[in-house]
Image (tube, rainbow over all chains, first blue to last red; front, side, top):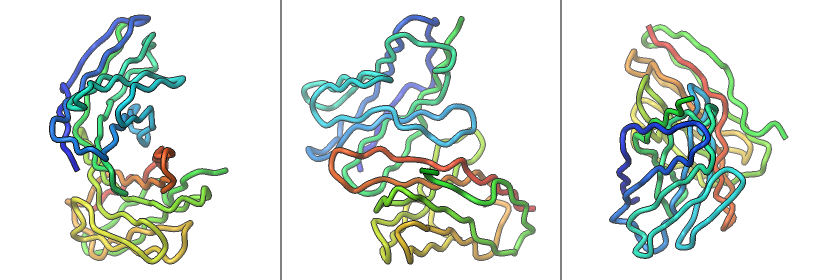
Length: 108
Length: 114
């Protein structure tokens, strides 16, 4: 499975868009990009995933570059409840391996 | 649906004791996994299963056994607990169907080994 690189921490003002980058330069053609988040000590929560095209759901948007070597998770209107650790993962297999993630803090 | 359930929520063991952490899911998911999360760290994959009767090792399998006799259940056994196994353990399940890769996590079991 390809490795990912994310900033250790970021912050964003409430109401603004939070843009979380992820580098996955060794991604293979059949590997998906997944994003999960973990709020405090709860189990991780699935946010979104994609292969090549940009994706959007009720929680977020995922922008994947054309060469698929990096992606950005966008939370369009961040709220205090979006404070969490965000994990970017690439995987094609049955096992999903987490990296260390980005700790996102939303400031009022 | 109850989703993914884990028992117990909390457990304290003495070094050398054995125990089984239980995980069950009612979504008929083929894939199930066990992770551990140490304080301030990310999740590390212990063991996973792609279906009943099939299991494989993850990143940190030593000291743990798993079996998958049914689709619903995926217990994790600690053979001889050590203080280094103090952690929060999360179980997760996922459908194998293409395009439905959402992994659902249980609430976790907080284990302390003295």
